[in-house]
Image 1 (cartoon, rainbow, N blue to C red):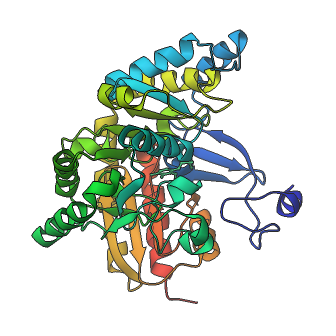
Image 2: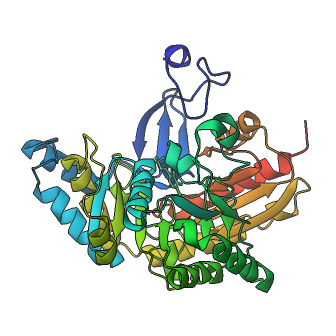
Image 3: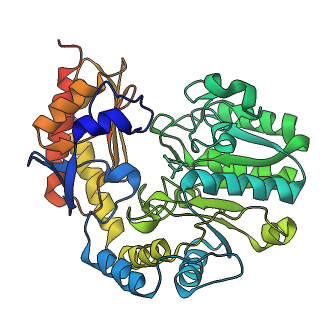
Amino acid sequence: MADSDREHVWHPYAAVPSPTPAHVVSRAEGVRLTLADGRELVDGMSSWWAAVHGYNHPRLNRALRDQLEDMAHVMFGGLTHEPAVRLARTLATMTGLPKVFLADSGSVAVEVAIKMAFQFTGRSRLLTVRGGYHGDTFGAMAVCDPVGGMHHLFSGALPRHVFADRPPAVLDGGYLAHLDETVARHACELAAIIVEPVVQGAGGMHFYHPAYLRRLRELADEYGVLLIADEIATGFGRTGELFGCDHAGVRPDIMCLGKALTGGYMSMAATLCTERVAKGVGVLMHGPTFMGNPLAAAVASASLELLGERPWREEVKRIEAGLAEGLAEAARAPGVREVRVLGAIGVIETHEPVDVSKIQDIVIGHGVWLRPFNRLIYTMPPYSIGDDLETITTAMTAAARSLGSA
Ligand code: PMP
């Protein structure tokens, strides 16, 4: 099967055939992935932030099965259904943002947020910060980091937005002044400011001080610009608060959710906004074929219910403490620039880009699945990881120790 995969299948950010074969997974259960050759790996990735409850969860399975008996999908133009309405109601209550657009992936949710801002303001320029990541579609790509992102490949086709510097981890008056100045200079042409709150994910797993988010909220209010919070990675408890914005006590005008929304089961995302924005937008010009998909909506509602029941705050705190302790030794390895932990996110940043295959071989040897990139060996395990966290930190430490050796 691996040979056919190499021959025919595109993988994320890869060529076909891929120089490195993908590992074949035959089963996923709890916090473990079983490979086709029988090896079992503890999952350190939650399938890219999504599977917060672990895999093959009986409650999520049941929600999906029950919904399937009624309907898998119907068009959302002119029709509606209980799973979508129930999910929208729950999300509105959780976020305080009452108007909900159910999109079919995170990138699309970002496109929709951008459209909302453009339609609301009649303007079409955005301000963001360097080091961000918002998705792979064109609107989203244009606000990804201009150096680390894909701007160089598609520069002729991307709109040019305004980039402030990457927000620092610590409080810095100079940076606040830089934000003030950058927003003021461009305010009259801006529709919105778009950022990932507190944690920049795929743009470098960077954590920044919540004061900057607070200042962006103030600046947006002062200049009549909208604030879009891309909570696709940070949402649903991952950073220790329910949403990244909660670290700053800020409510955005528009919020994007995805990834953990369905507990990692189906592709679904949401763009939410205030009453005022929805009124100003009027007819929103977007409508995907699989909008509001009942299966995805049903499993999302079940996942949010489960989140409400599980002590996720304590679990994330415990993971945070376990990561800090378990990765402390890695910080002393010569190839390591920094170890940082926030909520259920643990990051080893290296001095040099890592050899992904080599690091993967090491962590797989320790019974762990991770997907390092660039100068980052990182984990965001399922909240249900329990004692298996130590297996992950041990594997990461071994990987860090190997850096710089042949
Ligand atoms: N925004 C953020 C912050 C993300 O982390 C991602 C996915 N990595 C996206 C948007 C895009 O989501 P999707 O991959 O579902 O299109």
